[in-house]
Length: 125
Image 1 (spheres, helix red, strand yellow):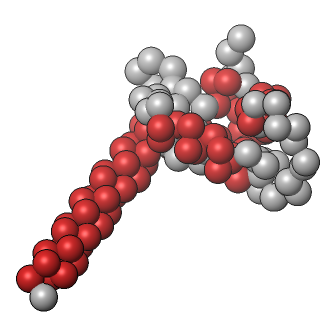
Image 2 (spheres, helix red, strand yellow; image 1 turned 180 degrees about the vertical axis):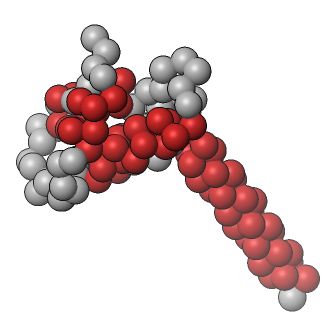
Image 3 (cartoon, helix red, strand yellow; image 1 turned 30 degrees about the vertical axis):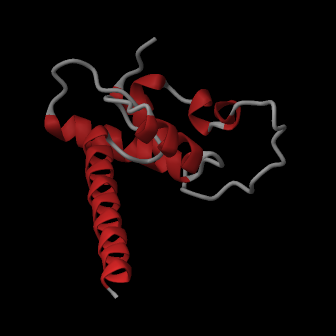
């Protein structure tokens, strides 16, 4: 079901607030607590040929929903590990997730280089 852009903006008008973490059952998947389950899915995924201004507005509205979600971190990690190629997940767009993944890969390489250099220093010493 698609809503007009106006109804999506109404969702965005909700002030961002942290919801206290609940004691979630270990058996319940993280997404059962997701705030976005109660919102229009169209807010989080782009319609085809969406104009840039509309996309930016929709993404910001989705991020405001994410900001008040108790499972935002779990959602973000899910999207980074899968990786999810589309939509706003855990407060990040697909492009932002690509940046995070690239930074993580660079950091892992730097740590491996440092570990090898340390190991080589121990052998030489």
